[in-house]
Amino acid sequence: MLRIHFTGRDLGRIRIAARPDALWETVLSFHRLRDKRSATALGEWRRETRSRLNGEVRLLASLVPLRGYFPDFLTPPEGISGVEHGLEALRATPPGHLRRDLGLLAAGHAAPGIRGARSAPPAAGDGAPAPRHEALAEGRPAALGELLGGLRDYHRAAVAPYWPHIRARIEADRAARGRALLDGGADELLASLPHPMCWRPPVLETAYPVDRELHLNGRGLLLLPSFFCRVTPVTLHDPEHAPVLVYPVDHAREGTGPVPARSQAGTGSLGRLVGQTRSAVLRTIEGGCTTGELARRVGVSPASASQHAGVLRDAGLVVTLRHGSAVLHTLTPLGAALLHGGTATAARTADARAPGASSEGRRPAALPPRAAAASGAPR
Image 1 (spheres, helix red, strand yellow):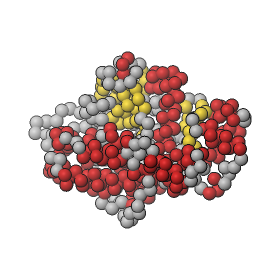
Image 2 (cartoon, rainbow, N blue to C red):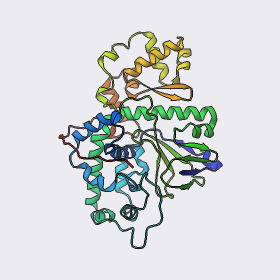
Image 3 (spheres, one colour):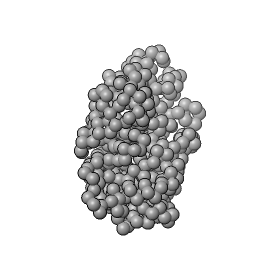
């Protein structure tokens, strides 16, 4: 069990990430790539991703084991501003931090299961990086360049093609959390977090492989919804880092995995998007609304509002997320682009040019096919 202890100051300093974190999604997707579970939901994504990969997984596999700890330096906070910002921050990691994290990795310091699960202190003599990581631990430019290149190439293959879909799911979750905050303040926000998280004031509890206490001590907490985080939340190992809790978005209404940007809306579905009423529905959903609110604002019955939202959702223009007894509708980047006169290409361009966005908003160049041999259970 992980217990996160809040003070009154912490409750006033809770933040919800404004967008997906490119490096957290990259690292967590690497777990999912080797995950034998969720075959129905993520099977197509795995097949497509493996067909694009070359040798990117070899170095990553040595740094991100199937279970247990992976280095904190792989997910600097700058990843929220885009993959290139995150990679530049990683390049600037002090050698002392590289050596410490790689020593923890080599010592197997964290218990199997989830990152940040602290076990007993390493025995004397433990904590030295593995020989293959010695150059990286010293911060040598060639070793850092190899790591950054591997992360960039893997991100291009596994995450970038699906970025609009990932971003839409996370923006939908953010809208739901924001509505909870407006409805009932920090208590309601923390109580709204998905299973297995449970708010027992002043402590947020969640399933974890070992007992761990995280005291925020007035620093607040960044809530970071993640598409590729599944089942249980993840946090940083080092308690001195700015506190962040990465948690899975709700996939209950999704029958499949991430959808590539190029296929988010089919011609048949878009052909149904005609008429003043549906245009009004799309405009109303832009700010986020429930089905009841949509019906009242557009002047239609709740059943009609639900039907219109369903058509837009099938076309890849709207995401629907359950919030308590209601459902909350928000636009996808493609829906926003269509609303403002864009095309599918414009949607990807707008997503790539959004504040803090980087190459994750663009479709990657074609990569030579390769059948990757990654398999196994996640952490």
